[in-house]
Amino acid sequence: MAKTVLVINSGSSSIKYQLVDLENGEGLASGLVEKIGEPVNGIYTHKYNGEKHQFEDEVIKDHEQGLKRVLQFFDEYGPNLKEYDLVAVGHRVVQGGSVFPTPALVTPETIAQVKDLAVLAPLHNGPEATGAEVMTRLLPDVPQGFVFDSSFFFQLPEASATYALNKEVADKYKIRRYGAHGTSHEYIGGVAPRVAGKDPEGLKQIVLHIGNGASVSAQISGKPVETSMGLTPLEGLMMGSRTGDIDPAAVFHLIRNAGMNVDELDTLFNKKSGLMGMTGHGDMREVLALREEGDANAKLAIDVYVHRIISYIGNYTAQMGGLDLITFTAGVGENSAPIRQFVCEKLAPFGVKIDLEKNAVFTSEPRVISTPDSSVTIAVIPTNEELAIAQKVAKLAEEGDAYGNKFNA
Ligand code: ADP
Image (tube, rainbow, N blue to C red; front, side, top):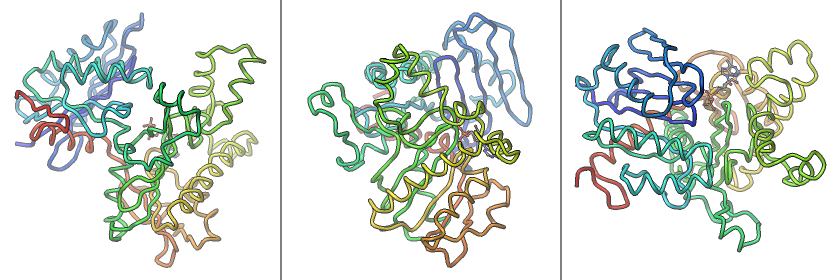
């Protein structure tokens, strides 16, 4: 019987889940609960065996109601969680701060700690802790674990993790560069050397995780030395709806001159900027199509998008003292041949050579898209955060965590 892990990603008004087969790494079933806590009927989508079951038949008042219904879907539409050997439930958490450099078993204490860290990730940690609290009540006999998006970057060198902010303030309010998307950067950094046929020892690589959210990391021998997201996921590359890097004085300027308050600024920078704010479209496919039609805003948006990526590649190459491998991943990185081409062509003066035919092939297979004589190998590898989370919590279930917790101990 296949061993499985149920991976849960709880947001404030939504829950995503996937049942992962630990042997072949595949998602056996997946689903989505939307509009939790809203005064309208919520939407449930459960996918299994090529079938999609969708319901919009009740107001979903909280995560408990949503997750109870999800467990009923597994009973009614499969796969039956008792028949499949469910060894653990994994909860993705955005912010582990300095408290969680590694994954943790879900216990009343770790739930409280995750909630405390919500100061640093107000939109994420609260719902993520609630999801874990509810699932432990619903499935008390199954070990459950937290996997933190920030853990991988806990190993960043101090010079990269530290802002040049007043030390007293930075220490008191725990302001430093935590990074995000760590599970994906670690997973890709681990797989990429194999795909590229390179020895991981001493390998200098850049991982471009560019989806709706976007971040870049630099890794030497698989250890992170730089990443573009900071205190929150707002810093760094231009994204679907986030500004990425911007002079913080823009905030003072808007407070003084536009009378904006904190929430308005948060929404402007996180939800109404980036591709969305510059073109009215947050989806890269639509922006590229507009650019093809000659739309000036779309052209500028793509120019800025690529400009940022190149700035980071240059920066990180200098920080690492060289570069052997660049890997593209996530929605845009895995699927957009034009964006990969624009980035690689800008790097041509440094001997980077993209194979345009290989780049144009649309497949979900991990692959190399540079020519054999390129100065840097360019790879495209689909990320699989669910599998990475599943593997980590399966290990927690067996061995316990690094904080002395053991399941049922
Ligand atoms: P998230 O950050 O939400 O996990 P994903 O990694 O799933 O995002 O990426 C989603 C984004 O990927 C979409 O918003 C879209 O812009 C982009 N995308 C998906 N397919 C393509 C494609 N064929 N060409 C360009 N962009 C694409």
